[in-house]
Amino acid sequence: MKIKLLFILLNSAFLFGQKPVELKIESLTSVDETKEERTFTINYSITNKTDKTIHFILNPNHLIPVSSGSMNPRVYYKVYENETSIDLNGLFFEKGENIKTSGVMLRHNDSIRIANLNRILEEQKKYIIKNIQELKPNETREYSTTFNWDKNRYFKNDVMEYYIDEKEPHFYELHINLMKEELLSKFSEEEKNEILKDKNFIKGWFTSNKVEINFRE
Image (tube, rainbow, N blue to C red; front, side, top):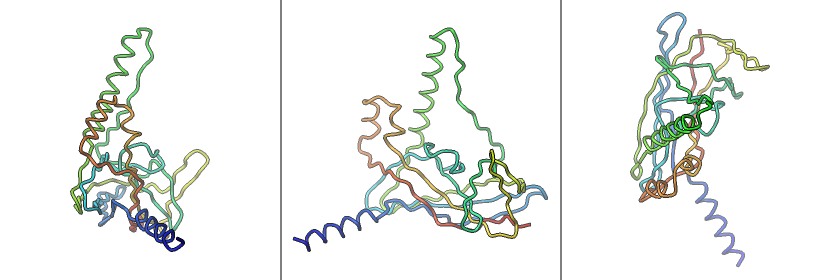
């Protein structure tokens, strides 16, 4: 009986230890566009490590800081100085970046307010459906994007101060938070059933390898 129980525990540990998705940084290079601006190009991949087709909700084309929140279906980045994380929101920017924040002004006319809320909800639902990804068994999909640094080294977030020391090594890491119920809560039961039909959704938090990022002069 003890041997059988041990086998079950070991088998369970093996199964839970397997990661269905691998997030990997393939390369991170940089070039100085001007004396005041450095452009980084990152190439990374997402691999289905299972023998089944999987699905997940993710916008893989824009990188955002992990400190900005974990409920956004995008790819997060994290920066380290040696082994210490630097939790900054304004470290990098994308050229031509135009982030639109959805907001609703409170008005006396309830019908207008409800119409605006419904429009925003429909836009959010379209965004989620648009970013449903599919990976075939053992398939690897590669992505590439650029981001910029204005060479500013001093940052202040509330009472926290940071200085990017050019003499210290720095590292860059990616994260993805694959969610299902949290993102599909905006849909009706009928809509959810249609989205989930014949799909194998993967959930979980996945972290890439660390690579060095060039903050040197």
